[in-house]
Amino acid sequence: MPNLRSAGVDVDVEARTVTLDGSPVALRAKEYDLLVALMSNAGKVMTREDLMSQVWDEHWFGSTKTLDVHVKRLRAKIEPDPGNPRYILTVRGLGYKFEA
Image (cartoon, rainbow, N blue to C red; front, top):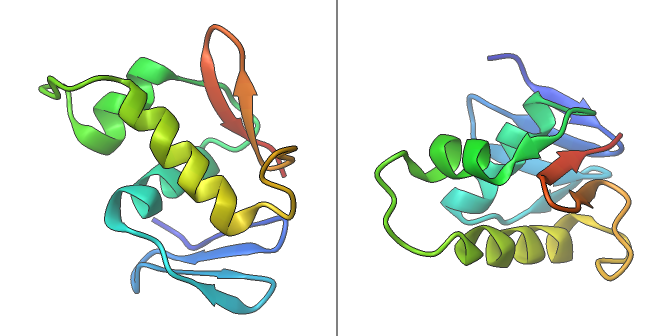
């Protein structure tokens, strides 16, 4: 998979590192996987089910609320204003999308 770049967010896929406007961003493993899934499909809505099966796995038995918690944490780390996100957008009733 090639490196991902959008809106000042750079993901080095081989090194599993993320920078925001050149500054390193420390992400937990699932936060990183979630960001890669969203950025790999930038501009497209990813359903909650797609994200859960891609980032966790199809055998996940916990609550899908874990997705919301991880999105919130990820927004806090990469969004200029996490309360008014411009990169990781909620698509009501469907899921999330990464908007450049």
